[in-house]
Length: 253
Image 1 (spheres, helix red, strand yellow):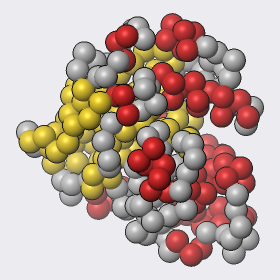
Image 2 (cartoon, helix red, strand yellow; image 1 turned 90 degrees about the vertical axis):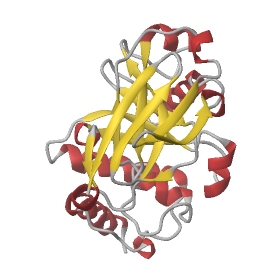
Image 3 (cartoon, one colour; image 1 turned 60 degrees about the vertical axis):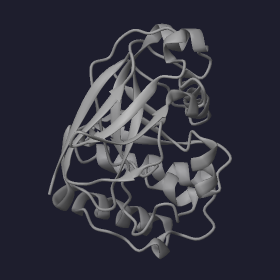
Image 4 (cartoon, helix red, strand yellow; image 1 turned 135 degrees about the horizontal axis):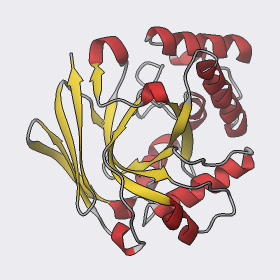
């Protein structure tokens, strides 16, 4: 399958919530080409009245990088359509998981040259839950990193709560809990996300700079999961973040 036909197939799967076989991914795609496909995927969304609103960072821990044979994180672009506090498993999702993440909200422009101190001054932090999802069947954790990248870093949905100013020290070993219907599914620390997560934002900015991209005011960044992803189930999820706040996600059948 040519890359042009693949892109059309990928967007069709996204639009129609249709699962693809992993074998349709073109052979011999390297990571930079995968990013070009991802950007074209986002362009197709924008041509159909979606707006680029932010980014997600995947594989921020050594554990998740090992699952996909990666040596660094990946980023994915996310649109306004992908921000939601309520999702339907049957109508909107294909192979969804759920993750516990801090979300950074951009107040002022940031570039590859921005320092960690500038990032802290120009962003706020919020509690977040991300729902990774792929257009491909049986993807976790059995898909090449290049395919993950081309698929928007398996971007599904994201929800985040109220954002607040913070200091470097505020991000030190924040404890987070992932709760479903009042029961704790898992918990973890921000220290697993490039310790502290502001380093993930710095990594993203440098990577975006390689692609002539920046972070603009109003954009968000979902910075990396505190825990290994869990299968998404029907119910009421809560993400609790020590010192940051809580956020909820409602999952319907």
